[in-house]
Image (cartoon, rainbow, N blue to C red; front, side, top):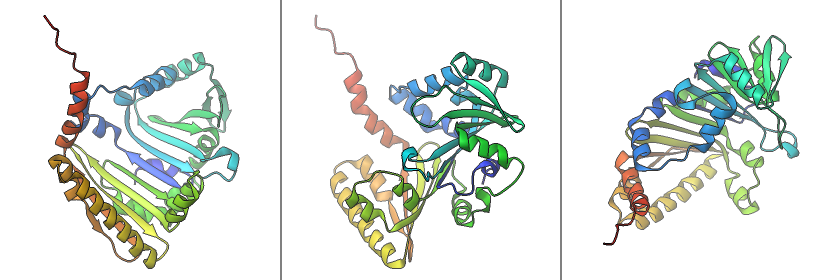
Length: 292
C-alpha cells in the first residue's frame, strides 16, 4: 500500500485510497465534465476555506475512519492524508482568516478550524507535501505515529485485503460489521447484513470503470446464502434492463464468484453508458426553440 498508511491508526475500520491526479485527468472525468453540468460547490468551498485546490494541488489521498467507542460521536473519527503540492504559509494564513487557531502538538503545528457542531476538524503538515486533515484526535495520532508505533500496516487482517487489491487507482477496505454498528440501519437491514464481516472494493477509472467488490462472511454457510441473494438480484436487474442495450452491457459484465465464505462481484462500466445516462438530462437542459 501507499506510504501514507504509516499514519493511519491500527484500529481503523475503513481505509480507502484514490489516485486523485489519475482520476481527475482520466478520459471519463473529462467526458463527464462535458456531458453534465457538474456543480462543484463543495470543492470550491473547501478551496475557499483551506486554499487547497483538489484538482491541481493533490496527487493522491488516503482516507480512514476509526470507530467511535462513544455513541454520541458516531460514526467515529476520520482522517484524510493528502499528498501533493501545498503552500503551507498561505494555507495557514487563509484558515486563520476564517477563524482557525494554531496549536503546537509535539513537533507539529496543528491548525484547528472554528468549532462547529460535531467533532473539531484540524489540519497539519506531517512532512513536506503531506497534509493531514480530519478530526483532531486522529491528527494528533498521526503526529504520534511519525515516531513509529502500531499503525494500520501492523493490522494483518486489513493488510491481507490491501495486498490483494492494491492495483486499481481507487480502492477501499473495511470492517463491515464495525461500520454497520456505527450506522443507524433499520433492524431488519442490520439483521440481514450481520453475516458480512469484511468488504473490499477496487476500481480502475480511465475511459470507463472496471472493478471488483469482495465480501467476506462469518462462515461458509453465510457465504453461500449471500451468493444466492446476489445471484437473485442480478437476475432481477437483468430482466429490468433487457430493453436498454447500453445498461444491459454493464449488467452482462457482472461476474459473480468466490468460494467458501468469500463472495466477489466483478463489473465493467464503459464510458458510453454515461453518455446514454446524460443524454436525457442534456435534452432537458437545452433551451426551447423560439417561436416566430
